View 1 (cartoon, one colour):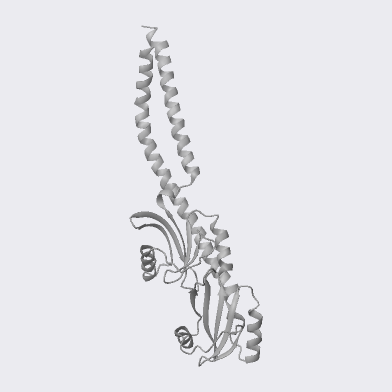
View 2 (cartoon, rainbow, N blue to C red):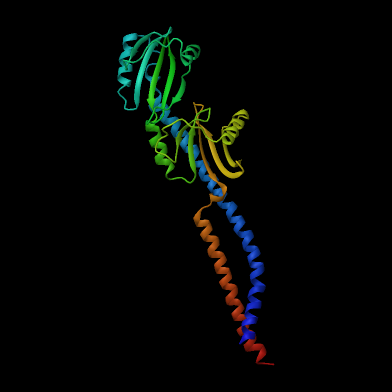
Length: 292
């Protein structure tokens, strides 16, 4: 009996060793395949999210789209009053070219002729915006835009945009950020809202700045941050200097279904080899030993 067990064990090990070597290669190949699928999913999700943000910004947050080119002051003010009724609009103010207040939906507004962004807005015909982080409230976007001989200043709550991003991020693997050109976090998928000013990791910001300097506005691949390997998909939000990105540690970037598949294949292979070893012993015992 001992000899039979020893025979089965020898045959089992003989076939198991090369099978395990092949299994390691198979597991590594499937792991790489899984990561590629994760990257493709991340890229698809980020591209969709980028276009969605652009769409929301243009359709909802472009406060001045209905009043560009309006020259009549009274009509301009009436439109401002109408636009200010939107739930996410916190304040709209209209200034003359010298910074004197013409109209405001808030009683706290004053002359802003020395405001740096106001001075920049006077020189350009495009909106100029900054992100502000009020205490215990979602971030807000402050925009200055030249409208003929006036400067329109608007403050809008980005909580509505944050809601859209948060609902989407729950369906995705990885960590999603929306950041401005300086790396300030506008949205972080770990939180419902960002309540204070903070920046992404410096190494990640340097990587993004390198992409910008090379004219790369969409990227997916591997990067190293603080000695760790990450998968990242990143896209510039069209019409803005904002970036939306999805990042995950490479070691966590695998689909469970792929892992389960590898596990089933390896376990099945080991069981087949064990069965084959026992069957080999039975055949050898029946047809060779008894005939000698």
